[in-house]
Length: 94
Length: 509
Image 1: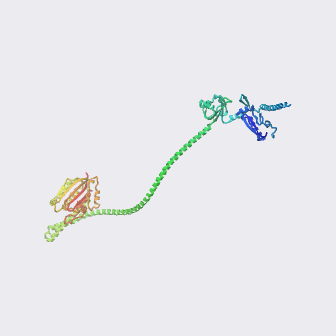
Image 2: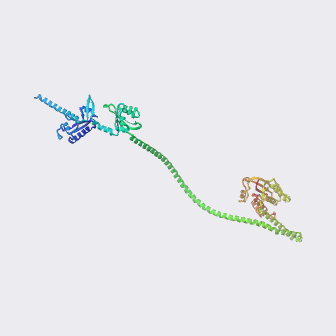
Image 3: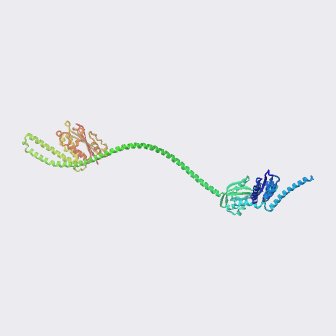
Protein backbone atom coordinates (compact mmCIF):
# COMPACT_ATOMS: atom_id res chain seq x y z
CA UNK A 1 0.00 0.00 0.00
CA UNK A 2 2.83 2.33 0.76
CA UNK A 3 4.40 1.87 -2.63
CA UNK A 4 1.99 4.20 -4.37
CA UNK A 5 0.59 7.53 -3.15
CA UNK A 6 -3.09 8.23 -2.68
CA UNK A 7 -4.55 10.60 -5.25
CA UNK A 8 -7.31 12.66 -3.65
CA UNK A 9 -9.72 15.10 -5.34
CA UNK A 10 -11.50 17.68 -3.21
CA UNK A 11 -14.53 19.09 -4.98
CA UNK A 12 -15.48 22.50 -3.66
CA UNK A 13 -17.82 25.28 -4.74
CA UNK A 14 -16.15 28.68 -5.10
CA UNK A 15 -15.01 30.65 -2.13
CA UNK A 16 -17.67 29.63 0.38
CA UNK A 17 -16.63 29.35 3.98
CA UNK A 18 -17.32 25.60 4.00
CA UNK A 19 -15.26 24.98 0.91
CA UNK A 20 -12.29 27.01 2.14
CA UNK A 21 -12.50 25.23 5.53
CA UNK A 22 -12.44 21.89 3.72
CA UNK A 23 -9.30 22.87 1.74
CA UNK A 24 -7.57 24.06 4.89
CA UNK A 25 -8.47 20.92 6.88
CA UNK A 26 -7.39 18.52 4.14
CA UNK A 27 -4.03 20.19 3.71
CA UNK A 28 -3.52 20.35 7.47
CA UNK A 29 -4.20 16.63 8.01
CA UNK A 30 -2.22 15.43 5.01
CA UNK A 31 0.76 17.56 5.90
CA UNK A 32 0.71 16.67 9.61
CA UNK A 33 -0.26 12.93 9.62
CA UNK A 34 0.20 11.60 6.12
CA UNK A 35 3.24 13.48 4.98
CA UNK A 36 4.29 12.38 1.52
CA UNK A 37 1.42 9.84 1.25
CA UNK A 38 -1.13 12.00 -0.61
CA UNK A 39 -1.39 14.04 -3.79
CA UNK A 40 -4.26 16.50 -3.51
CA UNK A 41 -6.15 18.27 -6.25
CA UNK A 42 -8.80 20.94 -5.51
CA UNK A 43 -11.58 21.08 -8.04
CA UNK A 44 -14.04 24.04 -8.16
CA UNK A 45 -17.28 22.79 -9.57
CA UNK A 46 -18.06 26.32 -10.79
CA UNK A 47 -15.03 26.06 -13.10
CA UNK A 48 -14.92 22.28 -13.81
CA UNK A 49 -18.51 21.15 -13.60
CA UNK A 50 -17.92 18.35 -16.13
CA UNK A 51 -15.33 16.66 -13.91
CA UNK A 52 -17.90 16.68 -11.09
CA UNK A 53 -20.45 14.95 -13.36
CA UNK A 54 -17.87 12.39 -14.47
CA UNK A 55 -17.17 11.46 -10.85
CA UNK A 56 -20.89 11.54 -9.99
CA UNK A 57 -20.48 14.31 -7.41
CA UNK A 58 -23.80 15.39 -5.91
CA UNK A 59 -22.79 18.03 -3.37
CA UNK A 60 -19.76 19.94 -2.20
CA UNK A 61 -17.46 19.67 -0.43
CA UNK A 62 -16.80 16.03 -1.37
CA UNK A 63 -13.52 14.21 -0.89
CA UNK A 64 -12.86 11.52 -3.56
CA UNK A 65 -10.22 8.79 -3.44
CA UNK A 66 -9.28 8.45 -7.10
CA UNK A 67 -6.52 5.87 -6.76
CA UNK A 68 -5.23 3.40 -5.79
CA UNK A 69 -8.03 0.81 -5.58
CA UNK A 70 -11.71 1.49 -5.77
CA UNK A 71 -13.09 4.97 -5.88
CA UNK A 72 -14.51 6.14 -2.60
CA UNK A 73 -16.03 9.48 -1.62
CA UNK A 74 -17.30 11.21 1.50
CA UNK A 75 -19.37 14.41 1.49
CA UNK A 76 -19.43 17.14 4.13
CA UNK A 77 -16.89 18.75 6.44
CA UNK A 78 -13.43 17.24 6.22
CA UNK A 79 -12.16 15.49 9.37
CA UNK A 80 -9.31 13.14 10.26
CA UNK A 81 -11.78 10.26 10.80
CA UNK A 82 -13.25 10.76 7.33
CA UNK A 83 -9.82 10.87 5.73
CA UNK A 84 -8.73 7.65 7.50
CA UNK A 85 -12.00 6.08 6.43
CA UNK A 86 -11.59 7.05 2.80
CA UNK A 87 -8.02 5.81 2.82
CA UNK A 88 -9.11 2.49 4.47
CA UNK A 89 -6.70 3.07 7.33
CA UNK A 90 -7.42 2.02 10.90
CA UNK A 91 -5.13 4.66 12.43
CA UNK A 92 -2.59 7.19 11.33
CA UNK A 93 0.36 4.82 11.84
CA UNK A 94 -0.74 2.27 9.26
CA UNK B 1 -20.16 -26.57 -0.76
CA UNK B 2 -17.80 -25.49 -3.43
CA UNK B 3 -20.79 -24.12 -5.37
CA UNK B 4 -21.65 -22.03 -2.45
CA UNK B 5 -18.11 -20.62 -1.88
CA UNK B 6 -17.90 -18.39 -4.93
CA UNK B 7 -21.41 -17.28 -4.28
CA UNK B 8 -20.42 -16.33 -0.76
CA UNK B 9 -17.31 -14.58 -2.00
CA UNK B 10 -19.38 -12.79 -4.60
CA UNK B 11 -21.95 -11.85 -2.02
CA UNK B 12 -19.41 -10.69 0.52
CA UNK B 13 -17.78 -8.60 -2.17
CA UNK B 14 -21.23 -7.15 -2.98
CA UNK B 15 -21.77 -6.38 0.70
CA UNK B 16 -18.48 -4.49 0.84
CA UNK B 17 -19.61 -2.53 -2.21
CA UNK B 18 -22.92 -1.81 -0.61
CA UNK B 19 -21.25 -0.76 2.63
CA UNK B 20 -19.11 1.65 0.69
CA UNK B 21 -22.11 3.07 -1.16
CA UNK B 22 -24.05 3.18 2.11
CA UNK B 23 -21.16 5.05 3.69
CA UNK B 24 -21.16 7.52 0.80
CA UNK B 25 -24.91 7.95 0.95
CA UNK B 26 -24.91 8.24 4.74
CA UNK B 27 -22.14 10.83 4.65
CA UNK B 28 -24.07 12.74 2.00
CA UNK B 29 -27.31 12.62 3.95
CA UNK B 30 -25.51 13.51 7.16
CA UNK B 31 -23.72 16.36 5.50
CA UNK B 32 -26.89 17.74 3.97
CA UNK B 33 -28.78 17.32 7.27
CA UNK B 34 -26.06 19.07 9.24
CA UNK B 35 -25.52 21.86 6.79
CA UNK B 36 -22.03 20.72 5.88
CA UNK B 37 -22.84 21.20 2.19
CA UNK B 38 -22.62 24.47 0.30
CA UNK B 39 -23.72 23.39 -3.19
CA UNK B 40 -25.66 20.67 -4.96
CA UNK B 41 -25.05 19.47 -8.49
CA UNK B 42 -27.87 18.23 -10.71
CA UNK B 43 -27.16 16.28 -13.82
CA UNK B 44 -29.93 16.81 -16.37
CA UNK B 45 -29.06 14.83 -19.47
CA UNK B 46 -25.38 15.77 -19.25
CA UNK B 47 -26.09 19.39 -18.47
CA UNK B 48 -24.96 20.54 -15.01
CA UNK B 49 -26.98 22.75 -12.79
CA UNK B 50 -25.26 24.02 -9.67
CA UNK B 51 -27.45 25.08 -6.80
CA UNK B 52 -25.43 27.13 -4.44
CA UNK B 53 -26.55 27.63 -0.89
CA UNK B 54 -26.50 31.24 0.29
CA UNK B 55 -23.32 30.87 2.20
CA UNK B 56 -21.42 30.40 -1.04
CA UNK B 57 -22.36 33.83 -2.44
CA UNK B 58 -21.29 35.62 0.67
CA UNK B 59 -17.62 35.99 -0.23
CA UNK B 60 -18.53 36.96 -3.78
CA UNK B 61 -20.99 39.48 -2.50
CA UNK B 62 -18.46 40.95 -0.12
CA UNK B 63 -15.95 41.10 -2.94
CA UNK B 64 -18.36 42.64 -5.36
CA UNK B 65 -19.89 45.08 -2.89
CA UNK B 66 -16.80 46.24 -1.11
CA UNK B 67 -14.24 46.29 -3.87
CA UNK B 68 -13.68 49.71 -5.42
CA UNK B 69 -15.10 48.62 -8.74
CA UNK B 70 -18.54 49.02 -10.16
CA UNK B 71 -20.30 45.75 -10.86
CA UNK B 72 -23.45 45.35 -12.95
CA UNK B 73 -25.37 42.56 -14.53
CA UNK B 74 -27.62 43.33 -17.47
CA UNK B 75 -30.05 41.47 -19.65
CA UNK B 76 -29.39 41.00 -23.37
CA UNK B 77 -31.46 44.10 -23.98
CA UNK B 78 -29.29 46.15 -21.61
CA UNK B 79 -31.72 46.23 -18.66
CA UNK B 80 -29.74 46.57 -15.47
CA UNK B 81 -30.65 43.63 -13.18
CA UNK B 82 -28.00 44.06 -10.52
CA UNK B 83 -25.83 46.91 -9.40
CA UNK B 84 -23.37 47.07 -6.53
CA UNK B 85 -23.26 49.90 -4.00
CA UNK B 86 -19.92 51.19 -5.29
CA UNK B 87 -21.44 51.95 -8.71
CA UNK B 88 -24.32 53.67 -6.97
CA UNK B 89 -21.85 55.81 -5.01
CA UNK B 90 -19.76 56.49 -8.08
CA UNK B 91 -22.75 57.72 -10.04
CA UNK B 92 -24.30 59.37 -6.97
CA UNK B 93 -27.58 57.68 -7.90
CA UNK B 94 -29.75 55.48 -5.59
CA UNK B 95 -29.56 51.75 -6.28
CA UNK B 96 -33.30 51.53 -6.75
CA UNK B 97 -33.06 54.03 -9.64
CA UNK B 98 -30.24 52.21 -11.38
CA UNK B 99 -31.69 48.72 -11.17
CA UNK B 100 -34.44 48.60 -13.78
CA UNK B 101 -32.89 51.32 -15.99
CA UNK B 102 -31.05 50.67 -19.25
CA UNK B 103 -27.25 50.70 -19.44
CA UNK B 104 -27.15 52.70 -22.68
CA UNK B 105 -28.92 55.59 -20.98
CA UNK B 106 -25.59 56.18 -19.22
CA UNK B 107 -23.53 55.83 -22.40
CA UNK B 108 -22.72 58.62 -24.89
CA UNK B 109 -24.92 56.83 -27.46
CA UNK B 110 -26.83 53.60 -28.00
CA UNK B 111 -24.46 52.77 -30.89
CA UNK B 112 -21.67 52.24 -28.40
CA UNK B 113 -23.83 49.72 -26.54
CA UNK B 114 -24.57 47.91 -29.81
CA UNK B 115 -20.85 47.87 -30.65
CA UNK B 116 -20.19 46.34 -27.22
CA UNK B 117 -22.69 43.57 -27.81
CA UNK B 118 -21.30 42.86 -31.24
CA UNK B 119 -17.77 42.55 -29.86
CA UNK B 120 -18.81 40.45 -26.90
CA UNK B 121 -19.92 37.60 -29.15
CA UNK B 122 -16.30 37.20 -30.07
CA UNK B 123 -15.22 37.07 -26.40
CA UNK B 124 -14.91 39.88 -23.89
CA UNK B 125 -15.41 43.56 -24.54
CA UNK B 126 -12.96 45.88 -22.83
CA UNK B 127 -12.46 49.58 -23.36
CA UNK B 128 -12.48 53.10 -22.05
CA UNK B 129 -15.50 55.36 -22.36
CA UNK B 130 -17.22 58.24 -20.64
CA UNK B 131 -20.36 57.63 -18.59
CA UNK B 132 -22.94 60.41 -18.57
CA UNK B 133 -25.05 60.55 -15.47
CA UNK B 134 -27.12 63.71 -15.33
CA UNK B 135 -24.62 66.48 -15.89
CA UNK B 136 -21.66 64.50 -14.62
CA UNK B 137 -19.20 62.83 -16.92
CA UNK B 138 -17.15 59.96 -15.52
CA UNK B 139 -14.30 58.41 -17.48
CA UNK B 140 -14.33 54.64 -16.88
CA UNK B 141 -12.74 51.41 -17.96
CA UNK B 142 -15.53 48.97 -18.73
CA UNK B 143 -15.34 45.21 -19.27
CA UNK B 144 -18.30 43.03 -20.32
CA UNK B 145 -18.46 39.27 -19.90
CA UNK B 146 -21.16 37.02 -21.21
CA UNK B 147 -22.87 35.04 -18.45
CA UNK B 148 -23.84 32.29 -20.89
CA UNK B 149 -24.45 29.43 -20.90
CA UNK B 150 -25.73 29.59 -17.31
CA UNK B 151 -27.55 32.87 -17.70
CA UNK B 152 -28.86 35.08 -20.51
CA UNK B 153 -27.17 38.48 -20.19
CA UNK B 154 -23.84 40.05 -19.28
CA UNK B 155 -21.72 40.84 -16.28
CA UNK B 156 -20.02 44.23 -16.24
CA UNK B 157 -17.05 45.56 -14.24
CA UNK B 158 -16.49 49.30 -14.26
CA UNK B 159 -13.30 51.02 -13.06
CA UNK B 160 -13.40 54.73 -12.25
CA UNK B 161 -10.71 56.47 -14.29
CA UNK B 162 -11.38 60.01 -13.01
CA UNK B 163 -8.28 60.08 -10.85
CA UNK B 164 -6.29 58.30 -13.48
CA UNK B 165 -7.53 60.77 -16.11
CA UNK B 166 -6.73 63.63 -13.81
CA UNK B 167 -3.29 62.18 -13.28
CA UNK B 168 -2.98 61.62 -16.98
CA UNK B 169 -4.07 65.17 -17.68
CA UNK B 170 -1.68 66.45 -15.08
CA UNK B 171 1.04 64.30 -16.57
CA UNK B 172 0.06 65.50 -20.03
CA UNK B 173 0.13 69.09 -18.88
CA UNK B 174 3.49 68.55 -17.26
CA UNK B 175 4.65 66.74 -20.36
CA UNK B 176 3.48 69.62 -22.56
CA UNK B 177 5.12 72.09 -20.24
CA UNK B 178 8.27 70.02 -20.30
CA UNK B 179 8.13 69.76 -24.07
CA UNK B 180 7.60 73.50 -24.30
CA UNK B 181 10.51 74.01 -21.95
CA UNK B 182 12.61 71.60 -23.96
CA UNK B 183 11.62 73.42 -27.12
CA UNK B 184 12.48 76.71 -25.48
CA UNK B 185 15.77 75.29 -24.33
CA UNK B 186 16.39 73.96 -27.82
CA UNK B 187 15.61 77.36 -29.24
CA UNK B 188 17.83 78.96 -26.63
CA UNK B 189 20.51 76.49 -27.46
CA UNK B 190 20.14 77.25 -31.15
CA UNK B 191 20.25 80.96 -30.41
CA UNK B 192 23.21 80.40 -28.17
CA UNK B 193 24.90 78.40 -30.86
CA UNK B 194 24.22 81.19 -33.33
CA UNK B 195 25.41 83.75 -30.81
CA UNK B 196 28.44 81.59 -30.08
CA UNK B 197 29.22 81.38 -33.76
CA UNK B 198 28.90 85.11 -34.11
CA UNK B 199 30.96 85.64 -31.00
CA UNK B 200 33.57 83.26 -32.25
CA UNK B 201 33.63 85.14 -35.54
CA UNK B 202 33.74 88.46 -33.73
CA UNK B 203 36.48 87.17 -31.49
CA UNK B 204 38.45 86.15 -34.50
CA UNK B 205 37.93 89.59 -36.01
CA UNK B 206 38.85 91.16 -32.73
CA UNK B 207 41.99 89.09 -32.49
CA UNK B 208 42.90 90.12 -36.00
CA UNK B 209 42.13 93.72 -35.14
CA UNK B 210 44.10 93.35 -31.93
CA UNK B 211 47.04 92.09 -33.97
CA UNK B 212 46.68 95.02 -36.37
CA UNK B 213 46.29 97.37 -33.44
CA UNK B 214 49.45 96.01 -31.87
CA UNK B 215 51.37 96.75 -35.02
CA UNK B 216 49.68 100.13 -35.30
CA UNK B 217 50.48 100.82 -31.65
CA UNK B 218 54.12 100.07 -32.19
CA UNK B 219 54.08 102.44 -35.16
CA UNK B 220 52.16 105.02 -33.16
CA UNK B 221 54.55 104.67 -30.26
CA UNK B 222 57.37 105.32 -32.67
CA UNK B 223 55.49 108.23 -34.19
CA UNK B 224 54.69 109.51 -30.73
CA UNK B 225 58.34 109.58 -29.85
CA UNK B 226 58.95 111.51 -33.07
CA UNK B 227 56.03 113.79 -32.35
CA UNK B 228 57.22 114.41 -28.83
CA UNK B 229 60.58 115.34 -30.21
CA UNK B 230 58.87 117.66 -32.70
CA UNK B 231 56.61 119.04 -30.02
CA UNK B 232 59.60 119.80 -27.85
CA UNK B 233 61.23 121.50 -30.83
CA UNK B 234 58.01 123.39 -31.54
CA UNK B 235 57.71 124.48 -27.94
CA UNK B 236 61.23 125.83 -28.10
CA UNK B 237 60.47 127.49 -31.45
CA UNK B 238 57.21 128.92 -30.09
CA UNK B 239 58.99 130.34 -27.12
CA UNK B 240 61.46 131.99 -29.44
CA UNK B 241 58.63 133.27 -31.66
CA UNK B 242 56.71 134.55 -28.66
CA UNK B 243 59.81 136.34 -27.55
CA UNK B 244 60.35 137.78 -31.04
CA UNK B 245 56.69 138.82 -31.24
CA UNK B 246 56.99 140.56 -27.93
CA UNK B 247 60.09 142.35 -29.14
CA UNK B 248 58.38 143.33 -32.41
CA UNK B 249 55.36 144.67 -30.58
CA UNK B 250 57.66 146.66 -28.36
CA UNK B 251 59.43 147.99 -31.43
CA UNK B 252 56.14 148.74 -33.18
CA UNK B 253 54.79 150.75 -30.26
CA UNK B 254 58.15 152.50 -29.99
CA UNK B 255 58.02 153.26 -33.70
CA UNK B 256 54.47 154.64 -33.48
CA UNK B 257 55.55 156.97 -30.71
CA UNK B 258 58.70 157.90 -32.62
CA UNK B 259 56.67 158.59 -35.81
CA UNK B 260 54.29 160.85 -33.97
CA UNK B 261 57.17 162.70 -32.41
CA UNK B 262 58.87 162.94 -35.78
CA UNK B 263 55.77 164.41 -37.47
CA UNK B 264 55.37 166.93 -34.72
CA UNK B 265 59.01 167.75 -34.96
CA UNK B 266 58.88 168.10 -38.76
CA UNK B 267 55.95 170.52 -38.65
CA UNK B 268 57.28 172.62 -35.79
CA UNK B 269 60.83 172.73 -37.05
CA UNK B 270 59.67 173.54 -40.62
CA UNK B 271 57.49 176.29 -39.32
CA UNK B 272 60.10 177.69 -36.99
CA UNK B 273 62.83 177.41 -39.63
CA UNK B 274 60.81 179.60 -42.00
CA UNK B 275 61.10 182.64 -39.77
CA UNK B 276 64.91 183.03 -39.66
CA UNK B 277 65.10 182.06 -43.34
CA UNK B 278 62.71 184.84 -44.27
CA UNK B 279 64.84 187.31 -42.35
CA UNK B 280 67.91 186.05 -44.23
CA UNK B 281 66.05 186.53 -47.52
CA UNK B 282 64.79 190.01 -46.52
CA UNK B 283 68.29 191.11 -45.64
CA UNK B 284 69.64 189.52 -48.81
CA UNK B 285 67.09 191.48 -50.91
CA UNK B 286 68.03 194.65 -49.10
CA UNK B 287 71.72 194.00 -49.89
CA UNK B 288 70.86 193.21 -53.51
CA UNK B 289 69.03 196.56 -53.81
CA UNK B 290 71.73 198.66 -52.13
CA UNK B 291 75.21 197.21 -51.43
CA UNK B 292 75.34 194.53 -54.15
CA UNK B 293 76.94 196.81 -56.80
CA UNK B 294 79.78 197.63 -54.46
CA UNK B 295 80.86 194.01 -54.14
CA UNK B 296 83.80 192.54 -56.03
CA UNK B 297 82.93 190.05 -58.78
CA UNK B 298 84.05 187.26 -56.42
CA UNK B 299 81.77 188.70 -53.69
CA UNK B 300 78.86 189.04 -56.12
CA UNK B 301 79.15 185.36 -57.20
CA UNK B 302 79.22 184.11 -53.58
CA UNK B 303 76.28 186.39 -52.67
CA UNK B 304 74.18 185.03 -55.58
CA UNK B 305 75.00 181.45 -54.56
CA UNK B 306 74.01 182.29 -50.97
CA UNK B 307 70.71 183.71 -52.19
CA UNK B 308 70.00 180.58 -54.31
CA UNK B 309 70.80 178.35 -51.34
CA UNK B 310 68.35 180.32 -49.25
CA UNK B 311 65.74 179.91 -51.96
CA UNK B 312 66.37 176.15 -52.04
CA UNK B 313 66.03 176.06 -48.28
CA UNK B 314 62.72 177.90 -48.54
CA UNK B 315 61.43 175.31 -51.00
CA UNK B 316 62.68 172.52 -48.79
CA UNK B 317 60.87 173.93 -45.79
CA UNK B 318 57.69 174.47 -47.83
CA UNK B 319 57.77 170.88 -49.05
CA UNK B 320 58.39 169.56 -45.57
CA UNK B 321 55.41 171.54 -44.35
CA UNK B 322 53.32 170.17 -47.20
CA UNK B 323 54.36 166.62 -46.35
CA UNK B 324 53.57 167.04 -42.68
CA UNK B 325 50.27 168.66 -43.59
CA UNK B 326 49.38 165.63 -45.74
CA UNK B 327 49.91 163.50 -42.65
CA UNK B 328 48.04 165.60 -40.20
CA UNK B 329 45.22 167.41 -41.98
CA UNK B 330 41.67 166.30 -41.81
CA UNK B 331 40.62 164.09 -44.67
CA UNK B 332 37.43 165.25 -46.35
CA UNK B 333 36.44 163.02 -49.28
CA UNK B 334 34.44 164.67 -52.09
CA UNK B 335 33.11 162.93 -55.17
CA UNK B 336 35.27 164.55 -57.83
CA UNK B 337 35.96 164.14 -61.54
CA UNK B 338 39.68 163.53 -62.04
CA UNK B 339 39.63 165.38 -65.39
CA UNK B 340 38.83 168.63 -63.55
CA UNK B 341 41.86 168.21 -61.28
CA UNK B 342 44.14 167.39 -64.20
CA UNK B 343 42.86 170.47 -66.08
CA UNK B 344 43.53 172.69 -63.05
CA UNK B 345 47.07 171.35 -62.61
CA UNK B 346 47.83 171.78 -66.31
CA UNK B 347 46.69 175.40 -66.09
CA UNK B 348 48.87 175.95 -63.06
CA UNK B 349 51.92 174.50 -64.79
CA UNK B 350 51.18 176.07 -68.17
CA UNK B 351 54.29 178.23 -68.22
CA UNK B 352 56.64 175.34 -67.41
CA UNK B 353 54.88 173.16 -69.96
CA UNK B 354 55.22 175.74 -72.65
CA UNK B 355 58.84 176.40 -71.77
CA UNK B 356 59.79 172.70 -72.02
CA UNK B 357 57.51 172.04 -74.97
CA UNK B 358 55.55 169.36 -73.04
CA UNK B 359 52.48 167.68 -74.51
CA UNK B 360 49.94 166.15 -72.12
CA UNK B 361 47.43 163.66 -73.47
CA UNK B 362 44.54 163.18 -71.06
CA UNK B 363 41.45 161.15 -71.93
CA UNK B 364 38.12 161.55 -70.13
CA UNK B 365 38.94 160.39 -66.59
CA UNK B 366 36.67 158.70 -64.08
CA UNK B 367 35.09 160.25 -60.98
CA UNK B 368 35.54 158.96 -57.44
CA UNK B 369 35.60 160.04 -53.80
CA UNK B 370 38.86 161.76 -52.99
CA UNK B 371 40.48 164.61 -51.04
CA UNK B 372 40.63 167.27 -53.80
CA UNK B 373 43.51 169.46 -52.60
CA UNK B 374 45.66 166.40 -51.85
CA UNK B 375 44.94 164.91 -55.22
CA UNK B 376 45.78 168.21 -56.90
CA UNK B 377 49.12 168.11 -55.05
CA UNK B 378 49.58 164.54 -56.27
CA UNK B 379 48.95 165.41 -59.91
CA UNK B 380 51.11 168.49 -59.63
CA UNK B 381 53.99 166.47 -58.16
CA UNK B 382 53.72 163.69 -60.78
CA UNK B 383 53.52 166.05 -63.77
CA UNK B 384 56.31 168.19 -62.32
CA UNK B 385 58.38 165.04 -61.87
CA UNK B 386 57.74 164.06 -65.50
CA UNK B 387 58.91 167.49 -66.68
CA UNK B 388 61.89 167.46 -64.29
CA UNK B 389 63.16 164.07 -65.39
CA UNK B 390 62.52 164.56 -69.09
CA UNK B 391 65.04 163.38 -71.64
CA UNK B 392 66.98 166.09 -73.35
CA UNK B 393 66.75 164.49 -76.81
CA UNK B 394 62.96 164.24 -77.05
CA UNK B 395 60.13 166.54 -76.13
CA UNK B 396 58.33 165.38 -72.96
CA UNK B 397 55.11 163.53 -73.66
CA UNK B 398 52.72 162.60 -70.84
CA UNK B 399 49.72 160.30 -71.27
CA UNK B 400 47.06 160.21 -68.55
CA UNK B 401 44.34 157.52 -68.78
CA UNK B 402 41.87 155.93 -66.37
CA UNK B 403 39.36 153.10 -66.25
CA UNK B 404 37.20 151.28 -63.67
CA UNK B 405 38.29 147.71 -62.81
CA UNK B 406 37.10 145.00 -60.39
CA UNK B 407 39.72 144.07 -57.82
CA UNK B 408 40.25 140.56 -59.15
CA UNK B 409 40.89 141.92 -62.67
CA UNK B 410 43.90 143.85 -61.46
CA UNK B 411 47.15 142.05 -62.06
CA UNK B 412 49.93 144.03 -60.50
CA UNK B 413 53.20 143.94 -62.44
CA UNK B 414 55.88 141.86 -60.84
CA UNK B 415 58.73 143.94 -59.61
CA UNK B 416 62.28 142.93 -59.17
CA UNK B 417 63.89 143.16 -55.76
CA UNK B 418 60.66 143.83 -53.92
CA UNK B 419 60.33 141.12 -51.36
CA UNK B 420 57.09 141.46 -49.43
CA UNK B 421 56.16 144.95 -50.62
CA UNK B 422 54.11 143.87 -53.59
CA UNK B 423 52.23 141.31 -51.51
CA UNK B 424 51.26 143.85 -48.89
CA UNK B 425 49.92 146.12 -51.60
CA UNK B 426 48.03 143.28 -53.14
CA UNK B 427 46.24 142.59 -49.91
CA UNK B 428 44.80 146.11 -49.99
CA UNK B 429 42.73 145.25 -53.04
CA UNK B 430 39.43 143.45 -52.42
CA UNK B 431 38.66 141.12 -55.33
CA UNK B 432 34.98 142.22 -55.58
CA UNK B 433 35.42 145.97 -55.19
CA UNK B 434 35.61 148.49 -58.00
CA UNK B 435 38.83 150.38 -58.45
CA UNK B 436 39.74 153.46 -60.47
CA UNK B 437 42.95 152.68 -62.29
CA UNK B 438 44.81 155.89 -63.22
CA UNK B 439 47.89 155.60 -65.35
CA UNK B 440 50.40 158.44 -65.85
CA UNK B 441 53.03 157.58 -68.39
CA UNK B 442 55.98 159.74 -69.50
CA UNK B 443 58.88 159.31 -71.88
CA UNK B 444 61.54 160.61 -69.48
CA UNK B 445 64.82 159.21 -68.31
CA UNK B 446 63.20 156.59 -66.15
CA UNK B 447 65.13 154.63 -63.56
CA UNK B 448 66.51 151.20 -62.99
CA UNK B 449 63.73 148.79 -61.97
CA UNK B 450 65.45 148.00 -58.67
CA UNK B 451 64.71 151.58 -57.50
CA UNK B 452 60.94 151.31 -58.02
CA UNK B 453 60.24 151.51 -54.27
CA UNK B 454 63.10 153.71 -53.24
CA UNK B 455 61.83 156.63 -55.30
CA UNK B 456 58.85 157.01 -52.94
CA UNK B 457 61.00 157.46 -49.84
CA UNK B 458 61.67 160.90 -48.29
CA UNK B 459 64.97 162.52 -49.33
CA UNK B 460 65.75 159.65 -51.64
CA UNK B 461 67.28 161.14 -54.68
CA UNK B 462 68.46 158.97 -57.46
CA UNK B 463 70.38 161.79 -59.03
CA UNK B 464 72.62 164.51 -57.70
CA UNK B 465 70.93 167.83 -57.05
CA UNK B 466 73.03 169.61 -59.61
CA UNK B 467 71.65 167.48 -62.45
CA UNK B 468 68.02 167.66 -61.37
CA UNK B 469 66.55 170.24 -59.03
CA UNK B 470 64.23 169.07 -56.25
CA UNK B 471 64.01 168.35 -52.60
CA UNK B 472 63.42 164.57 -52.73
CA UNK B 473 60.10 164.87 -50.99
CA UNK B 474 57.68 165.03 -53.95
CA UNK B 475 57.11 161.34 -54.52
CA UNK B 476 57.01 160.68 -50.78
CA UNK B 477 54.07 163.10 -50.67
CA UNK B 478 52.46 161.26 -53.61
CA UNK B 479 52.82 157.93 -51.83
CA UNK B 480 51.40 159.40 -48.63
CA UNK B 481 48.37 160.84 -50.47
CA UNK B 482 47.62 157.49 -52.14
CA UNK B 483 47.84 155.80 -48.76
CA UNK B 484 45.43 158.40 -47.35
CA UNK B 485 43.01 157.34 -50.14
CA UNK B 486 43.43 153.62 -49.31
CA UNK B 487 44.88 153.12 -52.74
CA UNK B 488 48.16 151.82 -54.05
CA UNK B 489 50.72 153.30 -56.41
CA UNK B 490 53.30 151.40 -58.37
CA UNK B 491 56.09 152.88 -60.45
CA UNK B 492 57.51 150.78 -63.29
CA UNK B 493 60.40 151.83 -65.42
CA UNK B 494 63.51 150.95 -67.39
CA UNK B 495 66.45 153.28 -67.67
CA UNK B 496 65.79 155.85 -70.46
CA UNK B 497 62.41 154.26 -71.18
CA UNK B 498 60.14 156.63 -69.24
CA UNK B 499 58.18 155.94 -66.05
CA UNK B 500 54.67 154.54 -65.72
CA UNK B 501 52.80 155.30 -62.50
CA UNK B 502 49.81 153.00 -61.89
CA UNK B 503 47.40 154.25 -59.24
CA UNK B 504 44.49 152.14 -57.96
CA UNK B 505 41.89 154.04 -55.98
CA UNK B 506 38.75 152.55 -54.48
CA UNK B 507 35.95 153.71 -56.82
CA UNK B 508 32.77 154.41 -54.84
CA UNK B 509 29.62 155.56 -56.45
